[in-house]
Length: 257
Image 1 (tube, rainbow, N blue to C red):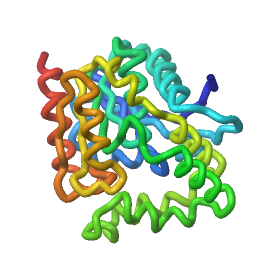
Image 2 (cartoon, rainbow, N blue to C red):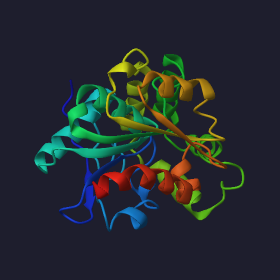
Image 3 (cartoon, helix red, strand yellow):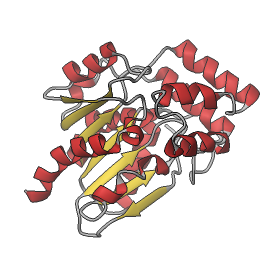
């Protein structure tokens, strides 16, 4: 197990219910910029960066998804936050799955967005790690443009903003994230995920197929599915109103309770 140092950003009222937002591979806390205006007045928003992304320092050793999850728990402990809702997208969703199975008493609502218990293959992620070590993250910009967004959104300012940030990510840390994804397989652990769970999928997501979504929805007891139309992998960026509505529909009853 590797003790990771991650960068966190905290916004919102001190006494409000807490939501942790965990981003995808290749993005930073800014992935969630569109969600802040609709939530920050009523919720305390805790966002983090993955190793070597944004404000997080590069990691000089291998790590797994569990290590990211444990770093989130350590920050909740430091802030004396006993329970929080958690919303993770892609890699961030995998962090959420681990927390939902291994620290369910800390999670109020679990939102698994555009993610899966297993994505691609060990070989896929190993090849991606080798590519970035050899050529940096520049070659990933066009690949990500096609996977993250539908054709209608690929030249939007928010799409360009996220794609322009890819080359700023630490190459070795990105590669190590790929290697963490290569060994992550939670399909046999989903029955241990016990918090109330919302699965969010982009209708046009080329990364998360129907079988991957079905595995989550049927593997986690009581999980609810919301499909965001006209959205690819970064559904929260491409269709923020629909994504925020799905979140508020599950968060607001807890806020009133």
